[in-house]
Length: 294
Image (cartoon, rainbow, N blue to C red; front, side):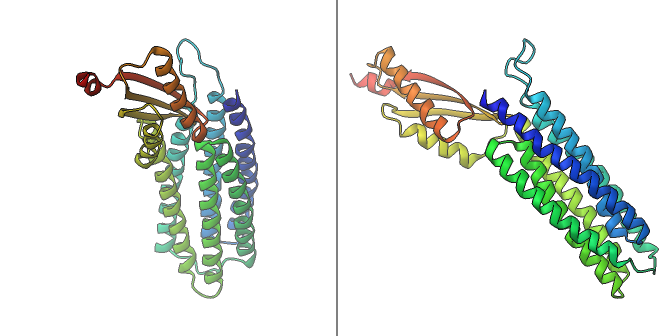
């Protein structure tokens, strides 16, 4: 099934993120300690948490590929969303740690300016993370993976964090020592905000939340199907990257079973054109107003 093939392909993005984060976190923490930069050390800690978050996403993608069984008759696709939720908690915890360290640094600033090497490492990291962000975002959009797109947005925030760290380090070198600690504080805030965004999206999906505008767009598609008199009910929810849709429409009460079935097939066909990974259930009811007029 193409859905599961896409999930396997999504593992590539997770593995790339893990490899890059492992390299950059080691480099940033080492150079940050040697070069006396709180901002670069905070950025390195951020990347370290991203390793854990990316591993959680990788595990979620693996579990999502398991076929349905007697205990999970709809499959295991929600494991991908649960993995995003776990990653959000990990990121929030480290973000709080970075904030605490930044406040301590601001309360007791070290007058020694960071080395120029720390700024170079931070700028290099920003460029690398932006490249990874573009790759994962394109892959996530192509295979419709919420977890991989969440990883991509995390990659983007990491690129921004590294740019901020570069600015803070350069400012500190030029004679503004507090700027390095302030940047570390902003890094912590960005980490927590990114964690909140991922948590919100995952919790919204797990609680069967569905975008109102998208629901209205799909409802319009149903109403335009020939033979549909009225759309009386429309419900949709996401199960990982698979969409489940329940629809109730009224039709001419004089239609036979075959013609009514053709209407349901046309509804399914039109929705599948815009949402190929969908399971659609259409319930047909007679239009009682037309029946009363006869």
